[in-house]
Amino acid sequence: MHWADVIAEKLLEKGKEHVVSSGITPSGPIHVGSMREILTADAIARAIRDKGGEAELIYVADTADPLRKVYPFLENLGYEKWVGYPLAEIPAPNDEGTYADYFLNPFFEALNAVGVNPRVVDNYKAYKEGKYVNESKNACDNIEKIREILETVSGRQLPKNWFPWTFVNDDGKMISGKVLKYEWPIVEFEDENGDIFTNNIEKGEGKLPWRLDWPAKWNVLGVTFEAFGKDHATKGGSYDSGVKIVRDIYGGTEPEKTVYEWINLKGEGAMHSSTGLAISANEILEVIPPEVLRWLIMKPQPNRHIDFDPGIGILNLTGDYERVELDYNKNEEKTDVHRAYELSQVDTEIKESGDLLGQVKSYRNLLTLVQSKSSLEDMISSLKRIGILEESTEEIERYLGKRVEYVKNWLARYAPDEIKFEIKKETPENEFDDEQKAVIKEMVAEFNAIEWNAEEIHNSFYRVQDKSEMEAKKIFEIVYLALLGQNYGPKMGFFLATNLEREFVVERLESY
Image: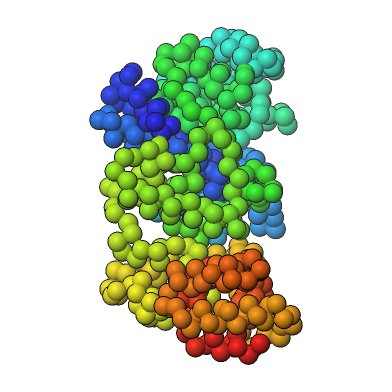
Protein backbone atom coordinates (compact mmCIF):
# COMPACT_ATOMS: atom_id res chain seq x y z
CA MET A 1 0.00 0.00 0.00
CA HIS A 2 1.28 3.47 -0.86
CA TRP A 3 2.44 5.54 2.13
CA ALA A 4 -0.31 8.14 1.65
CA ASP A 5 -2.98 5.45 1.83
CA VAL A 6 -1.42 3.91 4.95
CA ILE A 7 -1.56 7.29 6.71
CA ALA A 8 -5.08 8.00 5.43
CA GLU A 9 -6.41 4.70 6.78
CA LYS A 10 -4.87 5.41 10.17
CA LEU A 11 -6.50 8.84 10.24
CA LEU A 12 -9.89 7.52 9.15
CA GLU A 13 -9.87 5.07 12.06
CA LYS A 14 -10.09 8.16 14.29
CA GLY A 15 -12.78 9.98 12.33
CA LYS A 16 -14.14 10.83 8.91
CA GLU A 17 -13.34 14.57 8.84
CA HIS A 18 -9.78 15.86 8.82
CA VAL A 19 -7.79 19.07 8.58
CA VAL A 20 -4.40 18.53 6.95
CA SER A 21 -1.97 21.36 7.59
CA SER A 22 1.22 22.66 6.02
CA GLY A 23 3.05 25.97 6.19
CA ILE A 24 6.15 28.06 5.76
CA THR A 25 7.83 31.32 6.72
CA PRO A 26 8.19 33.29 3.46
CA SER A 27 11.62 34.69 4.29
CA GLY A 28 12.94 34.16 0.76
CA PRO A 29 12.32 32.36 -2.55
CA ILE A 30 10.35 29.20 -1.79
CA HIS A 31 12.33 26.32 -3.25
CA VAL A 32 11.79 22.79 -4.52
CA GLY A 33 12.68 21.38 -1.10
CA SER A 34 9.75 23.26 0.43
CA MET A 35 7.40 21.54 -2.00
CA ARG A 36 7.88 18.26 -0.16
CA GLU A 37 5.83 19.41 2.81
CA ILE A 38 2.82 20.74 0.93
CA LEU A 39 2.80 17.91 -1.64
CA THR A 40 3.04 15.30 1.12
CA ALA A 41 0.08 16.95 2.83
CA ASP A 42 -1.82 17.14 -0.46
CA ALA A 43 -1.24 13.43 -1.14
CA ILE A 44 -2.66 12.49 2.25
CA ALA A 45 -5.67 14.79 1.82
CA ARG A 46 -6.35 13.17 -1.57
CA ALA A 47 -5.98 9.68 -0.09
CA ILE A 48 -8.47 10.51 2.67
CA ARG A 49 -11.00 11.69 0.09
CA ASP A 50 -10.36 8.65 -2.13
CA LYS A 51 -11.29 6.45 0.83
CA GLY A 52 -14.56 8.26 1.46
CA GLY A 53 -13.42 10.71 4.11
CA GLU A 54 -13.42 14.49 4.10
CA ALA A 55 -10.20 16.48 4.17
CA GLU A 56 -9.49 20.20 4.15
CA LEU A 57 -5.97 21.18 3.14
CA ILE A 58 -4.74 24.38 4.77
CA TYR A 59 -1.53 26.30 4.27
CA VAL A 60 -0.31 28.60 7.03
CA ALA A 61 1.83 31.48 5.83
CA ASP A 62 3.89 32.60 8.81
CA THR A 63 3.87 36.26 7.80
CA ALA A 64 4.01 37.40 11.44
CA ASP A 65 7.57 36.06 11.72
CA PRO A 66 10.36 38.64 11.59
CA LEU A 67 13.08 39.13 9.01
CA ARG A 68 15.94 37.55 10.92
CA LYS A 69 18.89 38.91 8.94
CA VAL A 70 19.93 40.35 5.60
CA TYR A 71 20.16 37.25 3.40
CA PRO A 72 22.59 37.09 0.46
CA PHE A 73 19.81 37.87 -2.02
CA LEU A 74 18.96 41.06 -0.07
CA GLU A 75 22.44 42.54 0.02
CA ASN A 76 22.73 46.14 -1.21
CA LEU A 77 18.93 46.55 -1.15
CA GLY A 78 18.76 48.48 2.12
CA TYR A 79 17.11 45.76 4.21
CA GLU A 80 19.32 46.23 7.25
CA LYS A 81 16.72 48.60 8.71
CA TRP A 82 13.97 45.99 8.36
CA VAL A 83 15.64 43.20 10.34
CA GLY A 84 13.31 42.26 13.21
CA TYR A 85 10.10 43.50 11.58
CA PRO A 86 7.24 41.11 10.66
CA LEU A 87 7.43 39.96 7.05
CA ALA A 88 3.89 41.24 6.53
CA GLU A 89 5.01 44.82 7.32
CA ILE A 90 8.18 44.96 5.24
CA PRO A 91 8.09 46.37 1.69
CA ALA A 92 8.81 44.01 -1.21
CA PRO A 93 12.14 44.24 -3.06
CA ASN A 94 10.24 45.63 -6.05
CA ASP A 95 8.21 48.00 -3.82
CA GLU A 96 4.97 46.30 -4.91
CA GLY A 97 3.11 44.97 -1.88
CA THR A 98 4.75 43.31 1.11
CA TYR A 99 7.90 41.27 1.46
CA ALA A 100 5.80 38.23 2.39
CA ASP A 101 3.57 38.55 -0.68
CA TYR A 102 6.61 39.01 -2.92
CA PHE A 103 7.74 35.46 -2.14
CA LEU A 104 4.36 33.86 -1.47
CA ASN A 105 2.59 34.85 -4.69
CA PRO A 106 4.99 33.02 -7.05
CA PHE A 107 4.82 30.01 -4.74
CA PHE A 108 1.02 30.00 -4.86
CA GLU A 109 1.28 30.08 -8.66
CA ALA A 110 3.50 27.00 -8.45
CA LEU A 111 0.99 25.29 -6.15
CA ASN A 112 -1.80 25.99 -8.61
CA ALA A 113 0.33 24.55 -11.42
CA VAL A 114 0.83 21.26 -9.54
CA GLY A 115 -2.85 21.00 -8.62
CA VAL A 116 -2.65 22.06 -4.95
CA ASN A 117 -5.37 24.46 -3.83
CA PRO A 118 -5.25 24.89 -0.05
CA ARG A 119 -7.09 27.33 2.15
CA VAL A 120 -4.40 29.89 2.96
CA VAL A 121 -4.15 31.19 6.52
CA ASP A 122 -2.21 34.44 6.85
CA ASN A 123 -0.79 34.19 10.37
CA TYR A 124 -0.17 37.95 10.72
CA LYS A 125 -3.83 38.65 9.92
CA ALA A 126 -4.92 35.83 12.22
CA TYR A 127 -3.20 37.54 15.17
CA LYS A 128 -4.63 40.94 14.25
CA GLU A 129 -8.13 39.46 13.92
CA GLY A 130 -7.91 37.86 17.36
CA LYS A 131 -7.88 34.24 16.21
CA TYR A 132 -5.31 33.29 18.86
CA VAL A 133 -6.68 35.36 21.75
CA ASN A 134 -7.70 32.39 23.91
CA GLU A 135 -4.42 30.57 23.38
CA SER A 136 -2.43 33.76 24.01
CA LYS A 137 -4.30 34.43 27.27
CA ASN A 138 -3.86 30.84 28.45
CA ALA A 139 -0.15 31.09 27.73
CA CYS A 140 0.33 34.41 29.52
CA ASP A 141 -1.74 33.25 32.51
CA ASN A 142 0.25 30.01 32.92
CA ILE A 143 3.86 31.16 32.75
CA GLU A 144 5.27 28.81 35.39
CA LYS A 145 3.44 25.79 34.03
CA ILE A 146 4.73 26.51 30.52
CA ARG A 147 8.22 27.14 31.85
CA GLU A 148 8.20 23.71 33.48
CA ILE A 149 7.00 22.05 30.26
CA LEU A 150 9.56 23.73 28.03
CA GLU A 151 12.48 23.19 30.39
CA THR A 152 11.55 19.55 31.01
CA VAL A 153 10.99 18.70 27.34
CA SER A 154 13.85 20.68 25.81
CA GLY A 155 16.37 20.27 28.61
CA ARG A 156 17.17 23.99 28.44
CA GLN A 157 16.66 26.55 31.18
CA LEU A 158 14.63 29.65 30.34
CA PRO A 159 15.69 33.13 31.53
CA LYS A 160 14.34 34.16 34.93
CA ASN A 161 12.23 36.96 33.45
CA TRP A 162 10.96 34.89 30.49
CA PHE A 163 7.46 35.78 29.27
CA PRO A 164 5.46 33.80 26.66
CA TRP A 165 5.14 36.63 24.17
CA THR A 166 7.34 38.16 21.47
CA PHE A 167 7.12 41.91 22.01
CA VAL A 168 7.03 44.73 19.46
CA ASN A 169 8.10 48.32 20.04
CA ASP A 170 6.11 51.35 18.93
CA ASP A 171 7.59 51.06 15.42
CA GLY A 172 6.39 47.45 15.12
CA LYS A 173 9.85 45.87 15.42
CA MET A 174 10.06 42.61 17.36
CA ILE A 175 12.35 42.99 20.36
CA SER A 176 13.23 41.28 23.61
CA GLY A 177 12.36 42.92 26.89
CA LYS A 178 11.79 42.59 30.62
CA VAL A 179 8.18 42.54 31.80
CA LEU A 180 7.35 45.32 34.22
CA LYS A 181 3.64 44.70 34.52
CA TYR A 182 1.08 42.29 33.08
CA GLU A 183 -2.67 42.50 33.36
CA TRP A 184 -4.57 40.89 30.51
CA PRO A 185 -4.53 41.98 27.75
CA ILE A 186 -1.83 44.61 28.42
CA VAL A 187 1.82 43.79 29.02
CA GLU A 188 4.29 46.56 29.89
CA PHE A 189 7.97 45.88 29.26
CA GLU A 190 11.36 47.53 29.15
CA ASP A 191 13.82 47.03 26.28
CA GLU A 192 17.62 46.80 26.55
CA ASN A 193 17.91 50.60 26.19
CA GLY A 194 15.61 51.26 29.13
CA ASP A 195 12.72 52.40 26.94
CA ILE A 196 9.29 51.32 28.14
CA PHE A 197 6.53 50.04 25.84
CA THR A 198 3.14 48.38 26.12
CA ASN A 199 1.61 45.69 23.92
CA ASN A 200 -2.08 44.85 23.70
CA ILE A 201 -1.93 41.08 23.22
CA GLU A 202 -5.63 40.92 22.39
CA LYS A 203 -4.98 43.15 19.36
CA GLY A 204 -2.12 41.01 18.11
CA GLU A 205 0.64 43.44 19.02
CA GLY A 206 3.43 40.87 18.89
CA LYS A 207 3.00 37.09 18.74
CA LEU A 208 3.49 33.86 20.60
CA PRO A 209 7.01 32.35 20.45
CA TRP A 210 7.32 29.43 18.00
CA ARG A 211 6.99 26.64 20.56
CA LEU A 212 3.67 28.14 21.69
CA ASP A 213 2.58 29.48 18.32
CA TRP A 214 2.67 26.09 16.55
CA PRO A 215 0.36 24.24 18.99
CA ALA A 216 -1.90 27.32 19.02
CA LYS A 217 -2.41 26.82 15.28
CA TRP A 218 -3.26 23.16 15.83
CA ASN A 219 -5.90 24.13 18.36
CA VAL A 220 -7.45 27.07 16.52
CA LEU A 221 -7.46 25.43 13.08
CA GLY A 222 -8.46 21.97 14.32
CA VAL A 223 -5.46 20.31 12.68
CA THR A 224 -5.62 16.50 12.69
CA PHE A 225 -2.54 15.83 10.55
CA GLU A 226 0.65 17.67 9.70
CA ALA A 227 3.82 16.75 7.83
CA PHE A 228 6.96 18.54 8.93
CA GLY A 229 10.73 18.39 8.58
CA LYS A 230 13.02 16.32 10.77
CA ASP A 231 14.36 19.45 12.50
CA HIS A 232 11.06 19.77 14.40
CA ALA A 233 10.91 16.06 15.22
CA THR A 234 14.11 15.69 17.25
CA LYS A 235 13.81 14.47 20.84
CA GLY A 236 12.90 17.50 22.93
CA GLY A 237 12.08 19.48 19.80
CA SER A 238 9.15 21.72 19.02
CA TYR A 239 6.72 18.87 18.26
CA ASP A 240 7.39 17.19 21.60
CA SER A 241 6.84 20.43 23.51
CA GLY A 242 3.87 21.27 21.29
CA VAL A 243 2.13 18.07 22.34
CA LYS A 244 2.36 19.03 26.01
CA ILE A 245 1.38 22.67 25.38
CA VAL A 246 -1.70 21.87 23.29
CA ARG A 247 -2.89 19.31 25.84
CA ASP A 248 -2.06 20.98 29.15
CA ILE A 249 -2.33 24.69 28.30
CA TYR A 250 -4.75 24.99 25.38
CA GLY A 251 -6.96 21.99 26.20
CA GLY A 252 -6.67 20.50 22.73
CA THR A 253 -5.18 17.51 20.93
CA GLU A 254 -2.02 17.22 18.90
CA PRO A 255 -2.26 16.17 15.23
CA GLU A 256 -0.96 12.91 13.81
CA LYS A 257 2.34 13.48 12.07
CA THR A 258 4.67 12.39 9.31
CA VAL A 259 8.29 13.49 9.40
CA TYR A 260 9.92 14.08 6.04
CA GLU A 261 13.56 14.16 5.00
CA TRP A 262 15.23 16.99 3.10
CA ILE A 263 15.52 17.35 -0.63
CA ASN A 264 19.22 17.84 -1.28
CA LEU A 265 20.67 19.63 -4.26
CA LYS A 266 22.93 16.87 -5.53
CA GLY A 267 26.54 17.46 -4.60
CA GLU A 268 25.67 20.58 -2.59
CA GLY A 269 23.49 19.58 0.37
CA ALA A 270 20.06 20.53 1.69
CA MET A 271 18.35 23.44 -0.04
CA HIS A 272 18.15 26.70 1.90
CA SER A 273 16.86 29.97 0.48
CA SER A 274 18.85 31.90 3.06
CA THR A 275 22.16 30.64 1.67
CA GLY A 276 21.21 30.83 -1.98
CA LEU A 277 21.59 27.05 -2.24
CA ALA A 278 18.21 26.40 -3.80
CA ILE A 279 16.14 26.25 -6.97
CA SER A 280 12.69 27.82 -6.73
CA ALA A 281 9.60 25.76 -7.41
CA ASN A 282 8.70 28.11 -10.25
CA GLU A 283 12.11 27.69 -11.88
CA ILE A 284 11.91 23.91 -11.91
CA LEU A 285 8.35 24.03 -13.29
CA GLU A 286 9.84 25.75 -16.33
CA VAL A 287 11.90 22.64 -17.15
CA ILE A 288 9.63 19.73 -16.18
CA PRO A 289 5.85 19.16 -16.32
CA PRO A 290 4.05 19.60 -12.98
CA GLU A 291 3.17 15.91 -12.75
CA VAL A 292 6.88 15.05 -12.84
CA LEU A 293 7.55 17.39 -9.91
CA ARG A 294 4.75 15.67 -8.01
CA TRP A 295 6.28 12.29 -8.96
CA LEU A 296 9.57 13.35 -7.36
CA ILE A 297 7.70 13.57 -4.03
CA MET A 298 5.10 10.82 -4.42
CA LYS A 299 7.34 7.87 -5.24
CA PRO A 300 9.74 7.69 -2.26
CA GLN A 301 8.73 7.33 1.37
CA PRO A 302 8.65 10.73 3.13
CA ASN A 303 11.46 9.64 5.48
CA ARG A 304 13.82 8.99 2.56
CA HIS A 305 16.00 11.91 1.53
CA ILE A 306 15.91 12.93 -2.13
CA ASP A 307 18.99 13.90 -4.13
CA PHE A 308 17.70 16.34 -6.70
CA ASP A 309 19.92 16.77 -9.73
CA PRO A 310 18.70 19.48 -12.14
CA GLY A 311 21.28 18.31 -14.68
CA ILE A 312 21.32 14.76 -16.02
CA GLY A 313 19.01 13.78 -13.17
CA ILE A 314 16.12 15.48 -14.97
CA LEU A 315 16.42 12.93 -17.78
CA ASN A 316 16.39 10.09 -15.26
CA LEU A 317 13.43 11.57 -13.38
CA THR A 318 11.31 12.16 -16.48
CA GLY A 319 12.30 8.79 -17.93
CA ASP A 320 11.27 7.02 -14.74
CA TYR A 321 7.90 8.79 -14.75
CA GLU A 322 7.30 8.01 -18.44
CA ARG A 323 8.04 4.30 -17.98
CA VAL A 324 5.56 4.04 -15.12
CA GLU A 325 3.00 6.01 -17.13
CA LEU A 326 3.20 3.51 -19.98
CA ASP A 327 3.01 0.58 -17.58
CA TYR A 328 0.02 2.12 -15.78
CA ASN A 329 -1.96 2.26 -19.01
CA LYS A 330 -1.06 -1.31 -19.97
CA ASN A 331 -1.87 -3.06 -16.68
CA GLU A 332 -5.25 -3.30 -15.02
CA GLU A 333 -3.72 -4.57 -11.76
CA LYS A 334 -2.28 -1.54 -10.00
CA THR A 335 0.76 -1.53 -7.71
CA ASP A 336 2.08 0.96 -5.14
CA VAL A 337 4.16 2.53 -7.90
CA HIS A 338 1.00 2.96 -9.98
CA ARG A 339 -0.65 4.62 -6.99
CA ALA A 340 2.28 7.04 -6.82
CA TYR A 341 1.58 7.80 -10.49
CA GLU A 342 -2.09 8.50 -9.70
CA LEU A 343 -1.12 10.88 -6.90
CA SER A 344 1.29 12.61 -9.29
CA GLN A 345 -1.50 13.81 -11.55
CA VAL A 346 -2.45 17.47 -11.42
CA ASP A 347 -6.09 16.50 -11.91
CA THR A 348 -7.47 13.85 -9.59
CA GLU A 349 -9.13 12.22 -12.60
CA ILE A 350 -6.60 9.93 -14.29
CA LYS A 351 -6.46 10.47 -18.02
CA GLU A 352 -5.26 7.84 -20.46
CA SER A 353 -1.90 8.85 -21.83
CA GLY A 354 -0.02 7.50 -24.78
CA ASP A 355 -2.95 8.06 -27.13
CA LEU A 356 -2.06 11.71 -27.74
CA LEU A 357 1.56 11.67 -28.81
CA GLY A 358 2.89 8.24 -27.94
CA GLN A 359 6.66 8.10 -27.75
CA VAL A 360 6.90 11.81 -28.59
CA LYS A 361 6.06 12.44 -24.92
CA SER A 362 9.54 11.15 -24.15
CA TYR A 363 11.66 13.97 -22.73
CA ARG A 364 14.75 12.38 -24.31
CA ASN A 365 13.11 12.17 -27.72
CA LEU A 366 12.04 15.79 -27.52
CA LEU A 367 15.59 16.65 -26.52
CA THR A 368 16.72 15.21 -29.84
CA LEU A 369 14.09 17.08 -31.84
CA VAL A 370 14.73 20.41 -30.14
CA GLN A 371 18.43 20.29 -30.96
CA SER A 372 17.99 19.29 -34.58
CA LYS A 373 14.86 21.13 -35.73
CA SER A 374 14.49 24.89 -35.84
CA SER A 375 10.73 25.10 -35.31
CA LEU A 376 7.74 23.26 -33.91
CA GLU A 377 6.40 22.92 -37.45
CA ASP A 378 9.58 21.13 -38.53
CA MET A 379 9.34 18.79 -35.56
CA ILE A 380 5.74 17.90 -36.37
CA SER A 381 6.63 17.33 -40.04
CA SER A 382 9.39 14.90 -39.06
CA LEU A 383 7.07 13.00 -36.74
CA LYS A 384 4.44 12.72 -39.45
CA ARG A 385 7.02 11.59 -42.01
CA ILE A 386 8.12 8.60 -39.97
CA GLY A 387 4.60 7.69 -38.86
CA ILE A 388 4.85 8.52 -35.15
CA LEU A 389 2.23 11.23 -35.56
CA GLU A 390 -0.68 10.58 -37.89
CA GLU A 391 -2.21 14.04 -37.77
CA SER A 392 -1.66 17.37 -36.06
CA THR A 393 -4.44 19.19 -34.22
CA GLU A 394 -4.44 22.43 -32.25
CA GLU A 395 -4.51 20.35 -29.06
CA ILE A 396 -1.45 18.36 -30.12
CA GLU A 397 0.46 21.47 -31.20
CA ARG A 398 -0.35 23.20 -27.92
CA TYR A 399 0.64 20.14 -25.89
CA LEU A 400 3.83 19.50 -27.84
CA GLY A 401 4.74 23.19 -27.81
CA LYS A 402 4.58 23.32 -24.02
CA ARG A 403 6.77 20.24 -23.64
CA VAL A 404 9.26 21.64 -26.14
CA GLU A 405 9.54 24.75 -23.96
CA TYR A 406 10.43 22.58 -20.95
CA VAL A 407 13.24 20.94 -22.90
CA LYS A 408 14.55 24.21 -24.34
CA ASN A 409 14.68 25.76 -20.88
CA TRP A 410 16.49 22.74 -19.47
CA LEU A 411 19.04 22.80 -22.28
CA ALA A 412 19.73 26.48 -21.68
CA ARG A 413 19.99 26.29 -17.88
CA TYR A 414 20.96 22.87 -16.60
CA ALA A 415 21.94 20.43 -19.36
CA PRO A 416 25.52 19.13 -19.16
CA ASP A 417 27.66 19.59 -22.27
CA GLU A 418 27.63 15.87 -23.09
CA ILE A 419 23.89 16.08 -23.77
CA LYS A 420 24.22 18.82 -26.34
CA PHE A 421 24.91 18.18 -30.01
CA GLU A 422 24.84 19.79 -33.43
CA ILE A 423 24.57 18.09 -36.80
CA LYS A 424 27.67 19.12 -38.70
CA LYS A 425 26.95 20.59 -42.12
CA GLU A 426 30.52 19.94 -43.20
CA THR A 427 32.06 16.49 -42.91
CA PRO A 428 34.03 16.32 -39.63
CA GLU A 429 37.69 15.40 -39.86
CA ASN A 430 38.08 11.88 -38.50
CA GLU A 431 41.01 9.49 -38.87
CA PHE A 432 39.30 6.11 -39.07
CA ASP A 433 41.47 2.98 -39.26
CA ASP A 434 40.90 0.07 -41.65
CA GLU A 435 38.74 -1.85 -39.20
CA GLN A 436 36.51 1.17 -38.65
CA LYS A 437 36.24 1.82 -42.39
CA ALA A 438 35.20 -1.79 -42.93
CA VAL A 439 32.46 -1.37 -40.33
CA ILE A 440 31.35 1.85 -42.03
CA LYS A 441 30.85 -0.10 -45.29
CA GLU A 442 28.74 -2.65 -43.43
CA MET A 443 26.63 0.14 -41.91
CA VAL A 444 26.11 1.71 -45.34
CA ALA A 445 24.90 -1.63 -46.68
CA GLU A 446 22.52 -2.01 -43.74
CA PHE A 447 21.16 1.52 -44.05
CA ASN A 448 20.50 1.02 -47.77
CA ALA A 449 18.62 -2.21 -47.13
CA ILE A 450 16.39 -1.41 -44.17
CA GLU A 451 13.13 0.45 -43.73
CA TRP A 452 14.08 3.90 -42.42
CA ASN A 453 12.52 3.85 -38.95
CA ALA A 454 13.89 4.03 -35.41
CA GLU A 455 13.64 0.33 -34.60
CA GLU A 456 15.25 -0.89 -37.83
CA ILE A 457 18.04 1.66 -37.58
CA HIS A 458 18.76 0.64 -33.99
CA ASN A 459 18.78 -3.08 -34.81
CA SER A 460 21.11 -2.59 -37.76
CA PHE A 461 23.98 -1.68 -35.42
CA TYR A 462 23.69 -5.03 -33.68
CA ARG A 463 23.56 -6.94 -36.95
CA VAL A 464 26.84 -5.29 -37.94
CA GLN A 465 28.22 -6.14 -34.50
CA ASP A 466 27.43 -9.80 -35.17
CA LYS A 467 29.18 -9.66 -38.56
CA SER A 468 32.29 -7.89 -37.28
CA GLU A 469 34.50 -8.14 -34.21
CA MET A 470 33.55 -4.65 -33.06
CA GLU A 471 31.06 -4.11 -30.23
CA ALA A 472 27.95 -2.06 -30.97
CA LYS A 473 29.05 0.73 -28.61
CA LYS A 474 32.11 1.40 -30.79
CA ILE A 475 29.99 1.31 -33.95
CA PHE A 476 27.62 3.91 -32.51
CA GLU A 477 30.63 6.09 -31.73
CA ILE A 478 31.82 5.93 -35.35
CA VAL A 479 28.47 7.15 -36.67
CA TYR A 480 28.27 9.90 -34.05
CA LEU A 481 31.75 11.08 -35.05
CA ALA A 482 30.75 11.14 -38.71
CA LEU A 483 27.54 13.11 -38.13
CA LEU A 484 28.20 15.20 -35.00
CA GLY A 485 31.97 15.36 -34.70
CA GLN A 486 31.80 13.80 -31.21
CA ASN A 487 31.67 10.20 -30.03
CA TYR A 488 28.34 10.50 -28.21
CA GLY A 489 24.85 11.73 -28.98
CA PRO A 490 21.11 11.10 -28.70
CA LYS A 491 19.34 7.76 -29.08
CA MET A 492 20.50 6.78 -32.56
CA GLY A 493 17.36 5.19 -33.97
CA PHE A 494 15.00 8.03 -33.13
CA PHE A 495 17.63 10.64 -34.00
CA LEU A 496 18.29 9.39 -37.53
CA ALA A 497 14.68 8.50 -38.31
CA THR A 498 13.27 11.88 -37.31
CA ASN A 499 16.07 14.18 -38.37
CA LEU A 500 18.11 12.88 -41.27
CA GLU A 501 17.28 11.46 -44.66
CA ARG A 502 18.76 8.07 -45.44
CA GLU A 503 20.63 9.55 -48.41
CA PHE A 504 22.36 12.17 -46.25
CA VAL A 505 23.56 9.60 -43.71
CA VAL A 506 24.77 7.17 -46.36
CA GLU A 507 26.58 9.90 -48.29
CA ARG A 508 28.28 11.16 -45.12
CA LEU A 509 29.48 7.68 -44.17
CA GLU A 510 30.66 6.92 -47.71
CA SER A 511 32.81 10.07 -47.64
CA TYR A 512 35.14 8.24 -45.26
